[in-house]
Length: 529
Image 1 (cartoon, rainbow, N blue to C red):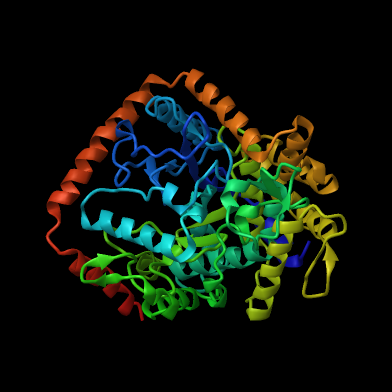
Image 2 (cartoon, rainbow, N blue to C red; image 1 turned 90 degrees about the horizontal axis):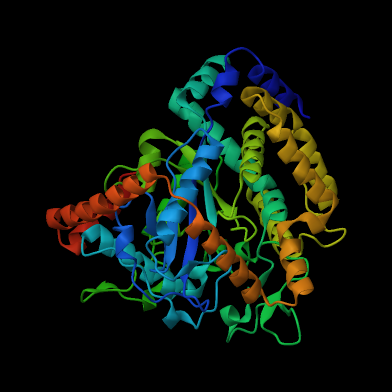
């Protein structure tokens, strides 16, 4: 344990912090494909009983009309957060007929880009912008990539925590700048250590062969002699590698997290400057919008990263403008696979470890990074995605190569004090228990979800599709049989009605042409500096 971390833990063990640690704020955004009973991507429109995907606070869609996204509000209770997500699932199942929710990150049977319907949001300018953005993603990266699902974990500490920490630090700058700097430190450390999350929780070592039909350069191996499944024998999370949210075009984009200004400038430039390969797609010529613009990034959300600094935006406000206005409010963790082995794709033990891990990233010393270190981080992430369970796998460190096992054990040992603090704050031993579970996975890679996926396929003689379909059917029965509390049912029904009314109000209030709307939106980026 470094002296810096030891000092931070001593401070948190002092009076006043216990209650603040009970109020860690979290929220979940969980994606799930709607599929037919036969296991193919649903072609039906967004179910009317789920309200408006544009304005519903709990249920929306991501890239595809078939890719549902469930959103929980900010919550200080892990159990309540998961109960809320379970209620969303139960309500959704009451509205989708005989369709199911796919229980894995890598998709069901797909039949090329044309089989993937782009999400619809209505006729308002904001709705059209969302759809055009998705068309642009499809042209740039292909629609298949957009059928991959994940779980985003939003994490923050309460305002009272930051006020106390700022006071204890001697008020070195404005409170807003202090909070932003601390979150940036968390993000830099997250990039240093996020390979550990990929190893521990990756659950996508294999994919249905239909996903890669027509592609020969994927580097995967057939799982069996029938070639229905492609896999990497020691892979962990193919979703986070070259098959998933990884862009060759963006590899030259140097995004620095040493200051908010560095981060904003890099993304702003990528949004404002044309990228010649994308000029082949219309961006408003003669009213034809196949993308929002021909820049490297249409908007900042197109930048693929395992973690994002975030702030809740005002109506019509660009995310970068919100960060410049008031600093970082929370971080969004984006590298979590949907586990087929849990009804919700995630469970309380995993969340407790995520909180422990993120507090470690926050409290540990976080020096500035440079291009060389970022290249090393990218290499480590790629190695763990593709070969994370390979015996003797070596990762890069500034001091030279070291084994994944050695590095993982060292990181987990350094988190012990944080787990103890969180247990003390909650009068439990569940954080230490979760930490011990991760230490067991490092000692025995067969305990990881990625190993379990391949083991069950092998032992049950199933291709990936059949394994994931079986779990999809199991969790469908689970949520259809689960009693939805009457209060929750009423709330979702009201949200459905209110969301449809809100969409109509937005459409009625539009006064600008679409061209004027986009010009006003993108004009925000010109005034950031």
